[in-house]
Image (cartoon, rainbow, N blue to C red; front, top):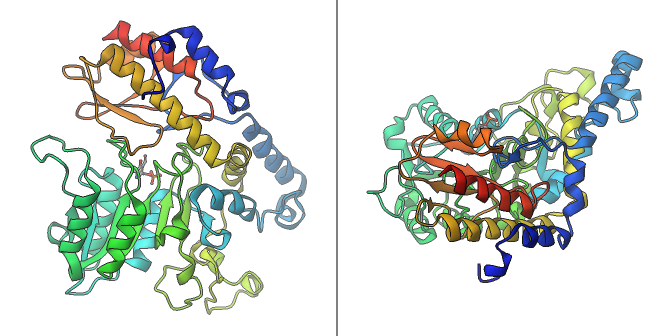
Length: 419
Ligand SMILES: Cc1ncc(COP(=O)(O)O)c(C=O)c1O
């Protein structure tokens, strides 16, 4: 914050920041809507090359029919492998630990099938106090599926101030203490690495260490982390992770999702797993035998042959990340969101509370007392898209790949006029 001062509070200053931005050319790689777009945490914008990549596969289908599996320019049979290396860089994993498949909630269930194996003594799942509803439904249903009452089995993090409704951020120390206190009863820690409602990023390495100490498995939902925060899934020792690709990863509405399983589990053919033919040994898959022989990588968790058109869109998107690189993106993101925070506090500090703590990615979540959803259409009329979550949270994201400092300056001007 100290890096900004009065002289930076002008449109010209914001434009100068853009000129100095080493990633400024990436904005031209996206279709930018006419509005000020600050909803990349919900649906990322479309990279221009996506159409070309998807069109190519449509043309190959028209040209080759079934032969496209082997003879397309990028054969469909191993098509998912085209995104592996870039995805691995984005989440800090080894290539054998990541695969694009299914959707986020489906993948969460598949991971829980492998990593949530409760006993009468060890059956608890630790989850965020304000978890995304789908995550909550998923873990509650997992507990029930194994014969446990979620009221006992699913434990929420304890937020800073329980009187604050809905309570928002949680101190790392409190999380570690809670894991320690749950001890032998804790089966799985399943947290978003960046909470969808508060924007708080958790200290993954510390959480993994604490969970391992009590013998629990630990998984993260990276819906708000993949492509947004620096991640080191392998080195941190995370057991599993899942994410969607339609937010920061810009792979389109309902895009194909991703999974990480740590290398230490990949050679274990007997790990409990829900299986399908696409997880079977690639050399003998088409012998169509009855006995499942898992691929010795995370690909063993694949169930079905994947949607190539969706993978084409993801491929277009992760190539942009490979060019920009995560370290450069995160550097820009810190500065861009820092500028946004500075302008908000300077001009609207009395009217709104920033809920998101310093540990965060691009997204800022703010509470505006007395102002609810009704302001959304007003902002839209004035040309700005942000989003509202019940009961009173506005989520606003300057996405470093395509938002500019000028966008941020203009958005704060619109907010000032509207509030
Ligand atoms: C944190 C979190 N978890 C789960 C989901 C649900 O994802 P999907 O519908 O792709 O399964 C979302 C979607 O926004 C999310 O933000």
